[in-house]
Amino acid sequence: MPAAELPLSIDVGGSIVSGVYARPASPVATLVVAHGAGAGMEHPFLRGFTAALNDDGVATLRFNFPYREAGRKFPDRPPAAIAAWRAVMEAAAARSEGEPLWAAGKSFGGRMASMAVAEGMPAAGLVYLGYPLHPPGKPEKLRDEHLYGLTLPMLFLQGSRDTFATPELLESVVARIGPAATLQWCEGGDHSFAVAGTKRAPEEVGAALAPAVAEFIRRHSGRRAAKGTP
Image (cartoon, rainbow, N blue to C red; front, side):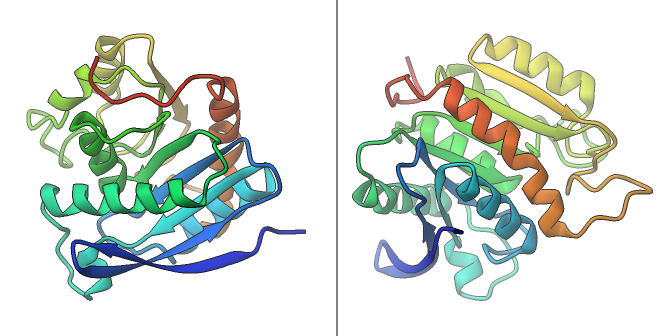
């Protein structure tokens, strides 16, 4: 039986953002999931991703950033996005029964999660669904400096045709981070993990990423939650 989804209202500094929480029986962990810059938490990609994780024994909480909740187009600046991450992680912790609490995000959402952890937000690990290492066509503008102080387990899931991350550059960044980071390529995938010549609904694309994430979480589930800096 699929895990029931529970709508949440989460206070972020006096503003309310929406969330959706789903908890299967005896979850191995809870994964908090943030959306990318151009779509909210109800995007079919994220719905398929979290539903598949629930089926695999991982509780999930996906949420909207304040700008999305307010109907604005432009993403929040890092301080506001990090404040949202902190509030939502606290909401997830309040519903936990002591299992590890992980943070994940699509593109912008994952980058903001990593910045929040770098500033001290506790998490057992990080999962990036297409890390936006640089703007398309601008590999010189790297968004990587804060990653090198992180010591918790990190999984980078990346499409090999993703214009937001030149393969050689991302491989170099992951190698520099060290053994805490794992890079897994999705062959032929773009920034949305769509593969040219293969027609799949966004729900299917998101669901297809869930097994690798669940396996990574299980592999590291014995580790204690850690802050991002040593």
